[in-house]
Length: 175
Image (tube, rainbow, N blue to C red; front, side, top):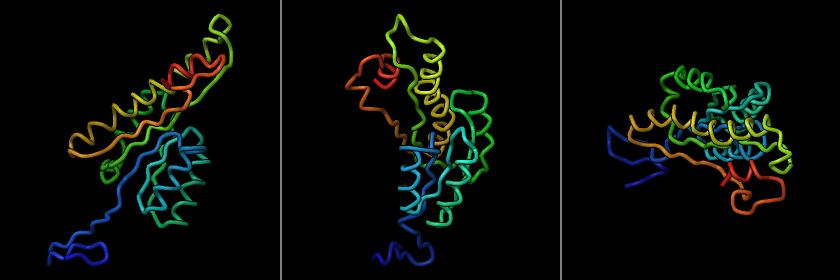
């Protein structure tokens, strides 16, 4: 018998709608911030990542106040493998029970042909859009495997299917 989201199993009653922990990279703006808003609106606790600590703290305060969820901020650049490893390995035990990882962090730099391209921009885009996603996934996946549950959502871009003039490196990283 069900009643208001609770299974009535006597002494061992469990909430069917228990809060999940959702880890979102690139949460300081755009799709990442919108994703955080949506998960918080649905009552889930959040681990928010981004490079801009002040934006993370502002979003944390807003979401906790508006939705009554718990939010943990992890300010680091997904391109920095050592920071990714240190931040995720030092999560408090309760926060290591990540149910959903949303790999959202990404960026596009430069609009030029390959022969005119700025290789520094290439490195930043590749390191963020590909290696950053891999670094974070590599640290979170063992936590999910250990618990035998979890989901990973990798956000892409329409540019991965429909390229645009001089968007060569970004398009390649999103394909």
